[in-house]
Length: 171
Image 1: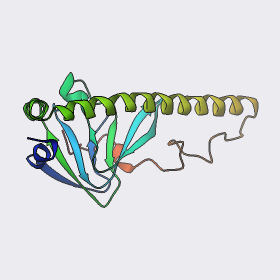
Image 2 (image 1 turned 90 degrees about the vertical axis):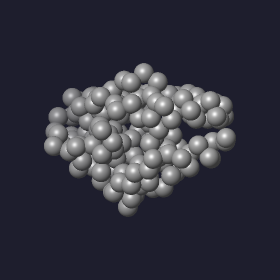
Image 3 (image 1 turned 135 degrees about the horizontal axis):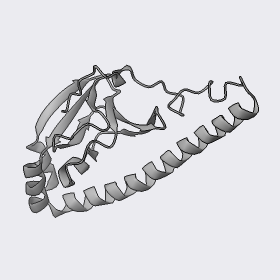
């Protein structure tokens, strides 16, 4: 059985714009996901602020650390499209897909490595910008360094769902 056939068998969920699939730091439910439709954004707390790392687009896997080592979620995932359709991959399904479709493991490993490099670079850039803003604020008190940009560093406002009262959809 190929990867397409394996993906067609996944349990599906649909979630709406602004909903949080899961929050950074919460225990994982042992599931990873495949995005069929919609767009999700990944946010990470960096020095007390939510920073957008990247978007997840249809055809991408994510949340694989929950399957591999059942670690807490490394970032928060928020729906930014009107709706999103996701397939849920639990550990049993993951093992089965790995056995039935060796290309699945290769694609997943390739993506994980690419993301590590991309995320590391993005975090370094965000920290560098925050350090520069802090240095400017010390030199020119009241300059409001960084005030024209928000916490995201890319001109986007953080979504409202990061309040403590929000219950993540995927947990």
